[in-house]
Structures are given as C-alpha cells and as structure tokens.
Amino acid sequence: SVPPLHRSFPPRALRSTWRVLHTRRAMGAAMPGGFNEKQDPPTVLWIRSALGVQFGLDLELIGKDLACFGIRLVVTTDSGQAMRAVDATGLSLRCVVQNWRRSKQDSGRRFIEELQHRCGNGRRHVPVLVLAHAAVESEALRQQVAALGESVADYDPRAAGGYSRLLRWLVQRCVGIEKEALFVRHAEAEHNVTNDWNLRDPPLTAKGESQARSLAAALPVEAARAQLLVTSPLRRTLQTTLLAFGCAGLPVLCEGALQECGDAPCDTGSDIATLRQWFGNVPLFSFERLDERWYVKEGPNETRRCRERLSRCTGLLRGRDEVRFVVVSHGNALSELLGVGRHGGRGLSYENGKSFSNCDCRPFWLVPSGAWLPAPPSSWPAPSAGAGGADAAVAPNGSPLA
Image 1 (cartoon, rainbow, N blue to C red):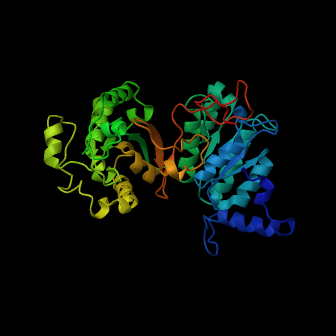
Image 2 (cartoon, one colour):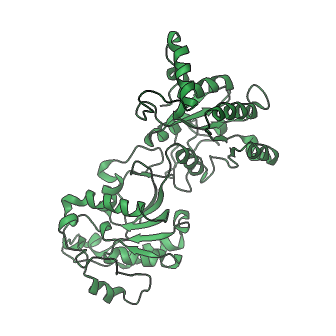
Image 3 (tube, rainbow, N blue to C red):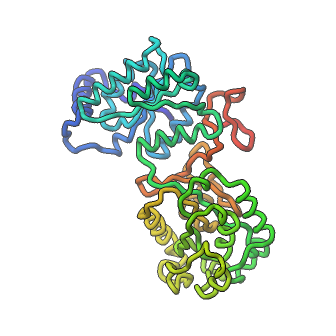
C-alpha cells in the first residue's frame, strides 16, 4: 500500500537532525555507511490535488505495482509537504509526478524551480513528470514545462497504452529497464493434442499453423518494435517463428538455451543435419551458432539444471547490443524463466500469472536486478479509483481493476 507521508518522517524530537542528515545526502555529502537500497528504496514522489488524484487514478494499486519493481511511492498534496519529502528521501528520490495547479495557478512551475535549485546544489537532477488534464489540453503548458527541462504526459493514462507509458517512465527512472521482450509460447503441436510425449520433436498441427498465422495478422506492438527474434531450435518453435514473425524482416537467433526443460522425446530437439533438411530453404534460419550436441539432455540441458540454463540465456541477451526482442520458447521453460504458472507470478495488477497457453504472448522488462518483470500490455488502461463508471479501468475480462 502507499505509505502515508507522515511515516516517512521521524518523531518531532529527531526531525531537525533528520533534516540535516538528509539535506547533506541530497547535496551529495558522504554519509557513514553510504546509501542503503534496502532501507532507502528508489522513491517516486507523487503530488496530487487535495481534491483528488489526477485522472481518477488508483494510487494504492499503482503503489503496489511499483513495489513489485522495488520502488516506493510517497504521496503528498501540496508543495510544502513535497519539499519536506524531498529532504527526507534524499538520494533515494528518483523522480516526481505532479499536477500543475494547487494553491496557485503556477504551483507546478514554482515547485520545479525550487526542486531544481535544491538539487542543483548537490549537482544532481530529479526528473519531474507533469501529469494533468491541463497538460493534455494545452500546447502552451507543454512548451512551458519543456523549457524547464522536464517532461509532460501528453496522454490520458486511462486510455489504451496510457498506463504502459506512465509505468515505463517511472520504472526507467527509478531502477532502469535494460531490455524488453515479447515472450511467446509455440503454437499447438501434435503432442499437445495426443498427449503422446514419445513423439520426437513434433511439428505443429494444422490448428497450430493457423494460430501462428493469426498472430502474424494481429502483430503486437511490442513485436513490431523488436530488433531481434530469438527462438528455441525445436521444430515447433521454429515453425511458430516462421509463420508468426517471418514477414517482420528481423534477424533470427536460434538459441539452444531456450529449449524445453524436460527430457521426454517431445521435448528433445533434432540434430543440425535434420534441422537443415526441414528448414534448409528458409534463409531466415541459421544453425551455425548451435553446438553439435545442443539437443542432448546432458550437462546444462539436464532437467534439474533448467533454471541455470535459462539464467545463462538471460545473460546472453544482456550482453547483446539489441534492446528489444521477440523470444519464442516453451511452456515449462517460460514458466521457469518468468516465474509464472505454478510459481504464481509477481502480483502486479495487470499481470497474467497463469502458464502460457499455445501461441500466448506477453511483454516483459528486464530490470538491473536480472529479473524479467511483466510489463503492461500496450492495450492496458491505468488502474482507476472507483468500482465502476466512465472513469473506471476495466480488465479484458470485463471486471473493474479497482
């Protein structure tokens, strides 16, 4: 839940010492023991009107979403409170979201100038996002904020994709987003229908081929922005990659570390000669990087070392120059890599914590901790306060988010 402002402050008797210490930290002074992220998590300061939250957003749910990324949300209702919070949070303050008009018509401008003055003394900058109806409606206001060197949300966060843009701005400035990926499970394959796990490297069914083509026709925004396709070299994932993303014009990396976790014949790939026999006339695929024994369930490919292998895969992606990927893999592998399915997910308001179904695709962000965390789908609206009505955010199943 969102911590009330008064909990950020010590008892009155200690307040002067607290302010001195945090002012020194804000000015860049060396503090005994240094900055402790466990005690002082990256913090978002949110300034709202005393009459309500911008766009009717649900700050409790937003605070819980941010907490999943290790970010604390502190909420205030006026500039005086906000400045005291700036002093109290010190170097843990990473960004500010504010409305524009509070006690005065130019309260937003005055706050930015005072914040820049204080941070300038410490030779640092705390970014500010102006989130207000006025900013959406007024080009003059957007230009005024830009002239101050700060950002404006020129969109309604309740609209499709609005929450994704808002959360991205906050997470990027608080902890950073190293990589982005659209994770895709292969389309329906023969063993998914027959439950015959003894089928060796089975192909897609006719229904599976149709699923993959349908994904191509409704190309997700995240896929359209990708720079590289990364796929498991099993036959069903290669077929899914070809049918769903073959027309995207992207290079393809066949990565053995993305193969399925189990050692049943259906989860065991084929040798390079067989892959070339099946896909040799497809210029999209190159198997030169694959080890000759990439499919043998020994060493890192053993079931008990699945998480180790997938961690190595994340390391390989981190080391690449590309930032945005489409990753095509398998149900169990994706559950282990992303913490979904039987692991239950991360608890984000927009998250689908269930196992991936055939041809299911979901966006994730790789944060500096090395974890893949769910990103809001491009079509997702922001959590809004209230149990219904015109301003209430509604999930795809039709139920209100708040």
